[in-house]
Amino acid sequence: MARNGEIPPNAIPGGQEAYGQTLYIARFITREGQLTPGKLAPQYRRAYVSYGGKEQTSEVYQVLTHPNPQELKWVPTSGNNLPTGALQAGGDYKSPLFIGRAPFQGGICCGKFEPSHGCVYLPWGEKEHCVPKNFEVLCLTRIHE
Image (cartoon, rainbow, N blue to C red; front, side, top):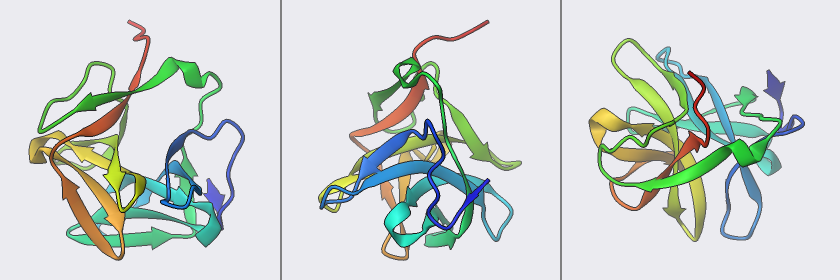
C-alpha cells in the first residue's frame, strides 16, 4: 500500500497529463466495493478511479510495480476486444477489470477496461468518461503456463 502521492520503486507509468506530469497505474476499492484500476497523480497526492459515472479518489492505494518493465506492453484495441496477455487488475462478482489508457484532454489517461462494456473508462474532472475506440490495454509480453 502507498499513500499521499508516494511512488514505490519500479512503479509502472500509465500516461501523462497534458503538461507532461507522469501518471502511474494505481488501484483501490471503491465505496461500492469494487477493486478498480485507475491513475495515481502524485502532484495531487492521491489516486483516482471511476465508477458509476463518477470519479472517486483515495489517499491510500496500490501502485502497479514490475522489476522488468520490458515484460509489459501497451496493445492497441477497440470495443470489447481483449488482447492476449491482458493484466487483470480488479473487478467484482460481475466482471473482471483490466488496465487501459487512451488519449484524453491533451495527455494520456489510464483507467479501467471493462470488456463487457466495450470501452475504457477514464477518471477525469469528477466524472467517468467512456472511450470506445483507439485505446490501449496493458499486457504481459510473455505468458507463463
